[in-house]
Image (cartoon, rainbow, N blue to C red; front, side, top):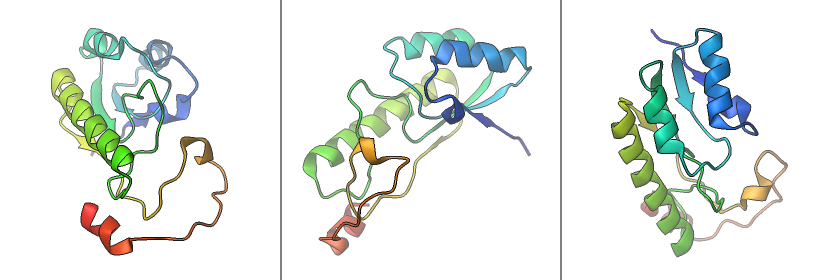
Length: 135
């Protein structure tokens, strides 16, 4: 069994600095998750792949324009952004030698990225069957 340390715990830090910290602690298994946008993420990870075993989780690499990944969204824009992001993540996973890319199940409601980590206001669920079908 392998244990992976998630970069999600360093969500406000630049990925190069996070990887440096983890390397200094002799941590080799890294789950790439969340963080801040970095247009050079591919280059950074390719440069570091010899030191780490990477797996990619959900909302990584962080897109330039934030949104909430939702595989069950009935909103065409969110659905399109989600699929585009997942395909990008899968391509990156292959490029850096990651054996896995994991993603969360879909949500029955769409939430704004600013609501993450906070109490989400009650929402009326619409088109439940459609969202399940989308997922």
